[in-house]
Length: 317
Image (cartoon, rainbow, N blue to C red; front, side, top):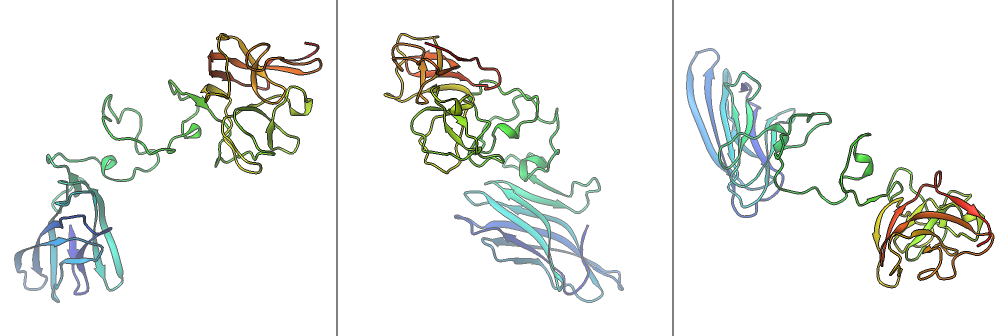
């Protein structure tokens, strides 16, 4: 039960911003009880709220009186999402009681008679009670195995960039993943480019710990540890991929007629076949050969690069 037991206390409502078209409608039922005369007078108030300026719903309790709040309802009649907060205002400050995002047609309710901890709740436009997870933020560990049924999530989307490699626990299976980028711009262990990297190039780690173009002709630029598919300048963070299928733009590669043929690191960092077509001329004597994938189609690379297991040979060609 919410009690307003001093003359300095009031019950308020406030929104996080201005409504788009229609004000939210609120209603409060309460009892004004005399603490000395033992009188009880049922009361109710109604009103509208349309912005981020607090509005008093119940106030003016007299000395030796207590206002016992029995129920509160806040209905979103607006055309879009509204975030409503019900709070207590006292001489000591403002103290939020409940805060909820309300879609069009939804309502926030308080039941002062509830004894099961369910005093505050939200109902949707069909009057179905919403769960805590569906109306606000969810703390870590709040949703566990078995709480979301098969097919329970039927609409909506996750914003771009919210889920990446390291958001999944060890052992998680993510099916149909297109690429694997253990090094990505903004990660906790970013790599900086040592030089401009243009087009699609195999890359290696330099002695100073930066990313450089891998070259089969230079032992100091081998082995390749991944592929960069973006055009990047020197001295910036970069996305580096180790696994995936990369469909290249016209002019960046031509593997026509070489489907399934192994791909290796070229003398200038291009991803080439051993001889013929793209990378014609192959490698020279003394170059280091490292296979990093196979041809997927005439313009696509199926890459899998692991410098610890890739075959490296250095001999005459």
